Image (cartoon, rainbow, N blue to C red):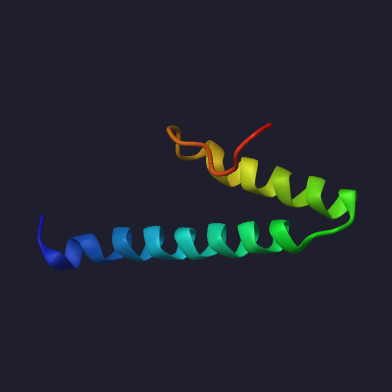
Length: 59
């Protein structure tokens, strides 16, 4: 695979990693249970596209 063909893949991975990091940070800062539940659901939805390691640790 040449570099030009890998660029979109690398960009997708980087963007997704940044989105997950931002959501995790917001989840850690969330104090209201409704906010925590909403952010947990978002992280779960994002994690469905990539099976393997879960994005959040469940109790």
